[in-house]
Length: 424
Ligand code: MN
Figure 1: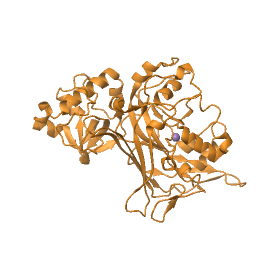
Figure 2: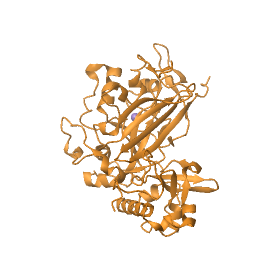
Figure 3: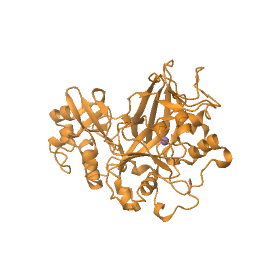
Figure 4: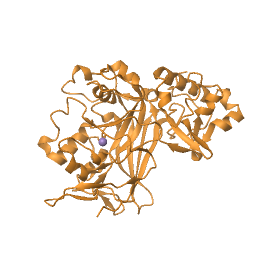
C-alpha cells in the first residue's frame, strides 16, 4: 500500500495532532541511557530503533551496520531507491494489521523506545551549509528597512536565488542553547568596538537536506536534482544584525551568521511531503533555462514561531508563515548552487532563507516584526521586543496538514545565553 495513503493507521495509537503519524516516518539519530547513538524513525510518542529492526532482519534493502551510525549520511548515500524501499517497508511493518512487529513482544520492547527516554542528536553530519534569501516578502521587507522602498530588491534578485556560503561547524540540534555573540560594531562616528551583539535575531527558515553527491564541473537538470533531495528540516538562522551591518560590504554576511544555526532533530523525507506539493508563485521575468522547473515544487508546510521570555510562564506565538510562500523553490536553489560546477555532497544543508508572507503576522524575523526596532513587538503581557534578549527561548514548529493527520517536523528550539565578557 502507498505509504502516503491518508487511510493508513499504525498499530501504535497516534493522536490526530501528533507530528509523527505513519504517513510521516521522519529519520533522526538518538541515544538512550546506556546505549550509543543510532538511527531511528519517529512514530507517535515512540522512536523506532532501526538498528534493532535491521538486526532482526527486517530491513534487507540496507547493508548491515548502516543504522548503527551517529549520522544519517551512510543511509542517505545509498540513494533514493533505497530511501523509498525502506520507507515502504517501515510503513508495512507499522500498519495496524501487520503482525510481524505488533505481535512480537520481545522485538517491540527492544525496538520501540518511548520518545521521552530518547535523547535526540544532530541527525546528519552537515557537510556544508549554504543559506539563501528566496522569499520575496522577506527580501522586500529587509531591503526597504536597509535601503529604502526604491532600492528594496537588488537588480539580481528576480533572476536567481541569492545565497552565501555559511558554516556547517555551528549547526546544532534543537535544544542546544545559543550564546549571544561578541562582534565588531561600528556605532555612529565612534571607532569600532568589540562588544556583545545588541541586535540578535532569528530567521524562520526550512532547510533542504541533500542526500546524494554531484560531480564537480557538472550542472544539474531537474530530474537529477530532484533525486538528490533526501528531505527537509526546520531551520533557525540566528543572525546578528548589527555585526552584519558593519561587516557585510562588499562580500556579504560572514560572522553575523556563523555563530549558530538550529535545526529540528527529525528529517522529514521529500517522499512524505509529496501529497503537500504546492505551486511556486509566478516568476517574472521567466528564469533562465537552467533554473526552469516543471510540476509543483513548493510545499504547503505551516510554520510557527513561539517566544518565551525569562519572565513568561508560557510562550506566545509571534509569527506564523508557510513554506509555500517561497519565490525560488529548494529545487531551484539546488540547481543554481551546482550551476557553475560546484560539487554537492551527501549531508549538504541549504537554508531556504527567511520565509515571510504578505501579512504583518507572517514576518519571519524580528528585523521585520519590529521594523528594525522602530515598532517594538508587543508580547501581550507588557513586555516588548525589538530584538532578542538574554533568556529568550524561541521554538519553531512546522507541519503539513492532511485529512485527519499531520506530517510534522517536531521543534527547532533554543534559548539565548548572555555573551561572554568582552576582551579588555
Ligand atoms: Mn538566513
